[in-house]
Length: 548
Image 1: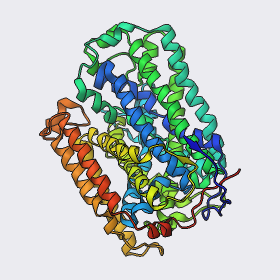
Image 2: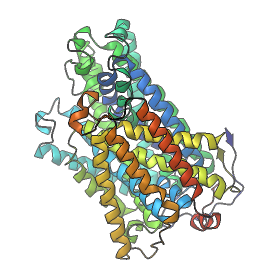
Image 3: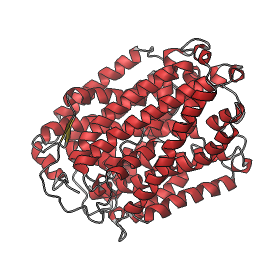
Image 4: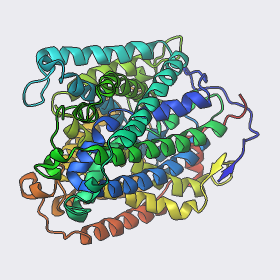
């Protein structure tokens, strides 16, 4: 790892944004996004999908996300701009690709806050059944409560980035403390080693292990490290702080999540296995860890967990509401969406992007009314967003080779294509029934972006660099076709026929096809990247800020 500060003097900040957030604020912004509803549900759903082998699923998911985090660490420190994940592909491939990955970034960010609210309401429904109907759908009263949660996120964000960072830091200390306490208490009071051998190590085989990564909340739980990149335009010292925040937050999160999975399996009472791993059952299953604590006589821990079920998801939803407004701000700066998204308050808050995210977030509750369905959708949208970073990484190492790199990923040109393969595998494992819905959302995004350009709602509408994005439609359609011909579904391997996947590609051969297809797209994209001069023009005056 190579870390150094650039000697470049601090440039003027982006119009309307203020560089008020320090290292601890950035770390806790990413960590607060990682420790959210994923820890409340991920261990249960992963165990149901993969049995004891859920531990392998977590390790694979962790390695994949850590690899992506290292790629983002270099890019985030190199280009400290608001909504970074939406802008890195723009620098490498121009407007057509930049607008596409910008839409993927915004789509991912805007759906997370509703997911976190749904997680809180799932736990709350144990003691307040009026929140949800029997099918886990929100009742009118529950929907009203969801609106109140989302409104709270808007109000806190409106107070400004410095106040938000302090509020989030306090909440994140709590969010880290409670799962760590849960690990210690369950390991010390109710650990049954023989649980790990029940029905063999991997009762659902390799497909169960791999499917759990995308559909059981594992990747979703580990998402959020990139929040430091999204707020890089408001960091006091991005050259030093962005890499430390991105890498540090994901390492802390991985340790916590694997520990939670171990103690969850170990603490299950033997009666929970009456119907096998796929249908683990114990009192309070709607709140897995709280229900488990109650089942083994730890009522005080169950009470603490029900309180945390409101605090942890709310903290994550709060940060993703922030990220959504910054991504839309960055999209507007690039000319992709109406200029109104750049309007900020005196405190530097993109207020229109914030309100727009609030409205869209309420709509998201409607088509995906349960936590697990929302997770499958947002996981694919997230990893599709992340896939743009390895592609941009490889190009920008060549297009912007002379810029000082505060953090330089060793052997980066080897890791970048591997990170792209990993991204596409995670997308594929999400299942055809999730990906076709994501495809509809992508088409809708192109309609909206095209409408903004045709109506000239932003005076900075760029010319479309079609030549440098010629690989993009082949990539998106190709991933869809491979998923359709594969055998993965969000509801598990047994539901392949009902979800529409053909299962024509045998297991392992399908992943070989994904790997080969990914490498072809990666090197094609590298070959048609923007000329160096155009990349420099798009990057403009972005410099690495040094000093406090």
